[in-house]
Length: 107
Image (cartoon, rainbow, N blue to C red; front, side, top):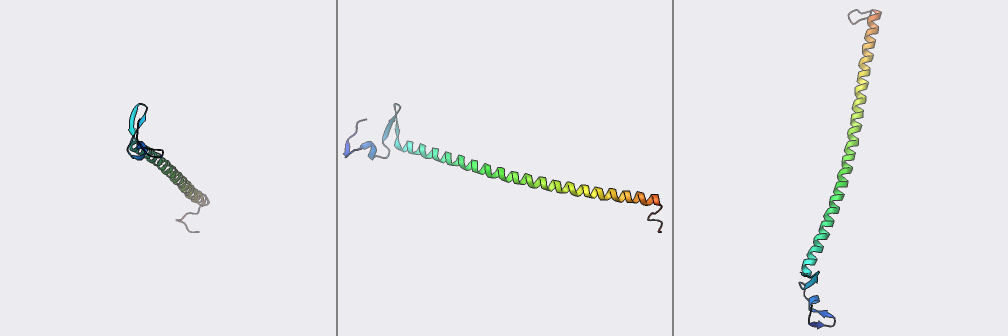
């Protein structure tokens, strides 16, 4: 590419913001290259943001799962205790019947 000298070491391509730069036999403007670089930076930033958001969502889901398991264990424990109390009451009633003591007969 032939250019006129505009100053010491400065060419027309360096002075103009949208000067064409030859790349692999094609002419591409510096503005296009700058836009592409900016687009790549934005894509990388958005990818990083998505990754961070996914990590945050995974952590929240893990905490929800832990809480859900803890609540299920507590509910199961309460259910078993209630069942044990009912069975104990039934056993006591059977024992009382065998001994001849019932609600109908006051001793």
